[in-house]
Length: 233
Image (tube, rainbow, N blue to C red; front, side, top):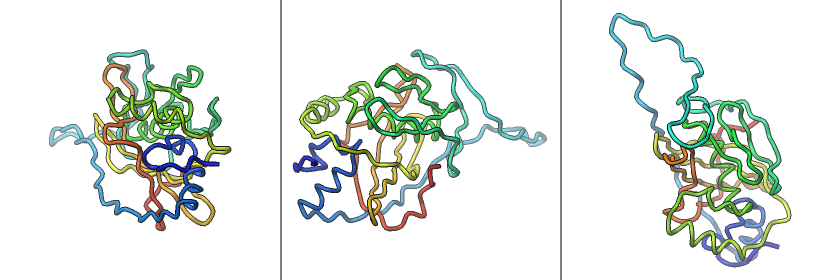
């Protein structure tokens, strides 16, 4: 049974158990209204080329990070409008999570799966994994340092662990840059579709993505039109 406190304020286990959150909505009679998703996606400016030259076709590339211990991963900064090659692997804490050879998590140290590519696609993989690890696996370092992180982490220790975890069926990149990204995940439940929005920040100290909690807990919503989401295979 889900914790019946304010689901957006204290029940941090809902990140890894949106099903429990939905049950809380039914009990409390909360009606969630979908928010407009008009945030424009931004892509890095392509490198300039001389007028007489023709740019070669894009090819996958890798580059070693400047700091931290993460290995070289993809540097393809195109937006993942098509579902990337994905393997679904069960995390030790219980949830099935997406894994990619090119985008991470390249290091799976017990309950802490980390090291994602510094790309929009890497952010998509990172948001699903790191948010679950912070909320359900108890990994403090899955989120970037901030006063809000400490507060939310302390509150989640008293939250109820759900009996089962949802399946992520889709995603959309709300925005992405070299320093930050925002990803919205689609989690069906019955005849409804829930969304979970995760904000991320690129942590230069570890050369990896981390959950950004400076604005509070991730936002949840009900969505009726799923056409803007990329189906995750």
